[in-house]
Image (tube, rainbow, N blue to C red; front, side):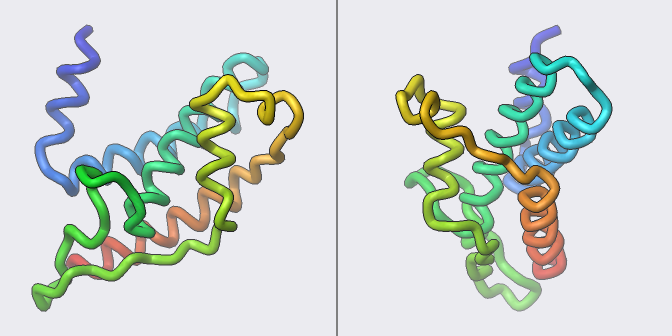
Length: 135
């Protein structure tokens, strides 16, 4: 199976990219609820954090020059959507990056208690608001 082709087929529109990100976030939460093997939990935790970070950046309109941001979408009146503040602390995305992207000493010294349900619920509320503004 060519996973790259499968993902590329899903990413035909900007909206489909957002849908895919949220589906993967939801899938990882569901998997973490049903498995007991710690290595598998760690895999799905990292998947969750990756997609959480992507969606937070999208909803709060903070990203790189070529990132898809909520401000790229328009409401039913043709106005650009405003960023949705999700209420995470300013350091939250950096913590995710340190946990998932870097082999840092901080990762050894600081263990974050990821509150999966709380993170998921904030993002889900933001996604729901986003969809309500474009329909």
